[in-house]
Image (spheres, rainbow, N blue to C red):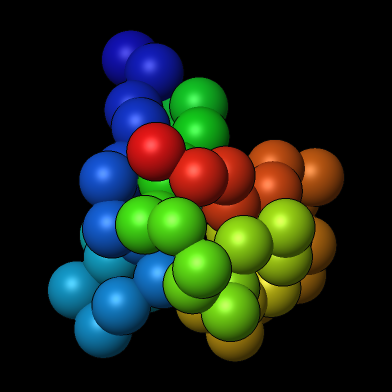
Amino acid sequence: MKIGIVGCAGRMGQMLIKEVLGTAGCELAGGTEGPGNPALGKDMAAHAGLEPCGLEISED
């Protein structure tokens, strides 16, 4: 199942990134943040404290 996360740079979003990446059968498809957020353009997994996954946080 492909999963996208809205508000992925916050505390809960980071927790969701970790859960999705650690769950069999789930695939992290992308994540967004609001305009001007300092996390924009950063790797989603790296921002959550994990090894980079190649998906950048984009603007919604």
